[in-house]
Structure formats: C-alpha cells, structure tokens
Picture 1 (cartoon, rainbow, N blue to C red):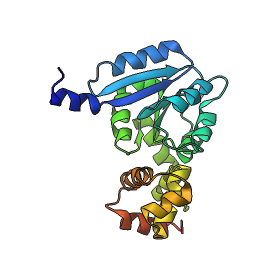
Picture 2 (cartoon, rainbow, N blue to C red):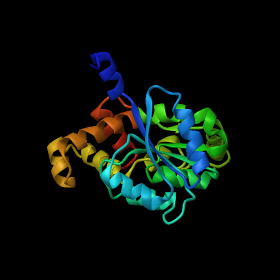
Picture 3 (tube, rainbow, N blue to C red):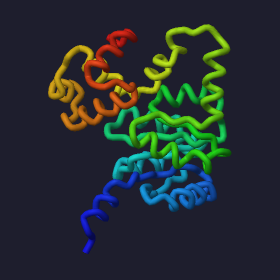
Length: 228
C-alpha cells in the first residue's frame, strides 16, 4: 500500500515531454532527468507533427522543444499551440541561439531558452524554474540579451517589460487585457469560451510571470504598458 507521503511526492512530480529529431539527444536528456526524483519524462516526439498529435491526447507540465525538426518545425509547433488551450510551458533547446530567434520564440509563448551545448548544465534548472511560472535562460543567452539591450537606445519594445509582454502567449495577453478592464473570472471565461478554473490558472501564471502580488498589480502593469 502506498503511504500518503509517497502519494504526495508522486503527484508533485514535474512531467516533461521531449521533442527533438535526434534520438541520441533525447536519450541523453532522459538520462539526465532520470537522476532527478521530482521530474518524470512522459514521452518524446521526433518531429513537430508528433508533438501536436501527442498533446491533443495527452498532457505534460513542460515541453522541451527543438526548433529544427522535420514535417513541422518548432516555430510551427509554437504557432499551433497559440490556438490551443491548456498547452504546456515550453523550454526551447536548440543548436541556434541567435538573439532574433530568442525574441521570436519568447513572443510566441516559450518561457525558457537553453542552447544544446549547455543542456547538461542548465536543463534541470530550467525545468524547475519554468514549472513555477518563471522564465529561464542559460548564462550565454542572458549575456546575449543584455548586450543587445546595452548596445542600442532603449525603445519601448526593448525594455525589460517590453520583452516580458512579448513573452506572453496570445491567451495570456487576452486575459491580462480583460483583467485590466475589470472583467470578472466568469465574464472572462464566457468571453473566451474557457472554464473559470482555466482563467484562474492563467491569472496565477500571469502574476508569477509579471512578478506582481495580485490582480491589482496585473491591472497596473497593463495600463502602464498601454495594453488597455
């Protein structure tokens, strides 16, 4: 018989799905994550089409997603997820770390970016941070982002809050705007065709992502950045 502590431990595991077209990389990530008691790999996909099909029938807390995959690439997967509800939190694991690509995937809903060359050092940290609703970038990615911001005049879309806005998913942006317009949870759910519990989940994720204390903080952030 499983005792209550073990049940709680099993229920608290972070579930992870891996998408990459190289089986050897998948095996390596699985081996690394297999050493972590709070992480459970729940499958993998070898192309973008398999990713979409898997998440239509299953769920995971985190998707580790490569950009360069056959049939549908990672960007196309991100676009597809923008039209779906209850999608996983996404960490990009890529051989490419161009700053334009990083900004693009953040704008499409990714919450973390780790180059493959430093996956062993960062992937576990990224999973734990992103599972809590926080963004995560490897050291070299953070350095590139900082150099980009320091190397040119600051515009609205270049400041930290602008980058944060670009990282919101389409659904998060919609809900943030409605919150700032003082719609209730039920009204937001009715307007978007989703359940009240889904609205509350998005609300909690927004509070963590934007790093404010409550709904009032979300409204102030939205007004400050001219979202409403």
